[in-house]
Length: 294
Image 1 (tube, rainbow, N blue to C red):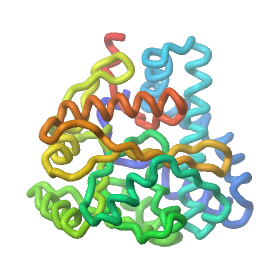
Image 2 (image 1 turned 90 degrees about the horizontal axis):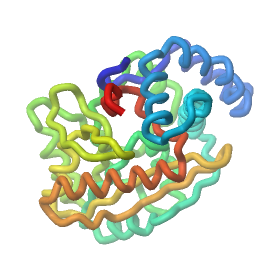
Image 3 (image 1 turned 60 degrees about the horizontal axis):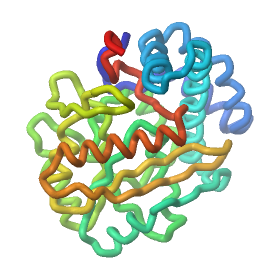
């Protein structure tokens, strides 16, 4: 069982190379078809991820056993599609996809006012592809993504060598906390700083909150920082719908300043709402809840 998130991508460099070949030379449909042979491998041999995903469907969504097992397979298939889509879009195939904006005025208003803001997303859907579509709403991306940069270096280096660089700016989390100054500098020039609120490293400070009927731990940093920065906070998700269609949601948080727990509660409620619409797009493949007690 994957007891904690290790900050690494699933798969190998060879696997990514094969999918890149299929996308470039055979098309998206062929790459999707290849997933039918890859998913059973992860289902059988990625025991931690499979068990975590099964727990989500069986114990949190209360699916029957057969439906839970089938949903694990479908969840892996959708996850694979989002990775393929992100790679294809970064090749310059953005025009192959359609995009729907829901609440995007909350983002554009912040950028026009140059007042800065915090975006909090989750590993629900695929927020990472949002930047490739932002020029459709006629503004230059000013998003700064706070990340640990802990993805497997070989995979990261390979993808950077074959894809177009995103306009997103990255702020790397540092042990000496110097990233806090980078965050402040980005906000001071009217930028938007994005965190993910649903993963943490072992030993980091956490906050507890109910999600889908059971208490879970969340990283304290994004919620403590966002509640103290005195800038608007948005919850943002990018969800896959039809085969080549994505839907961006942006909702403004209503929690009061310096109320980190209130902000976390509101965030958890927004994640629950999103999962009620897209139950197959929960992509946290580690021990998110304590499965010993249901």
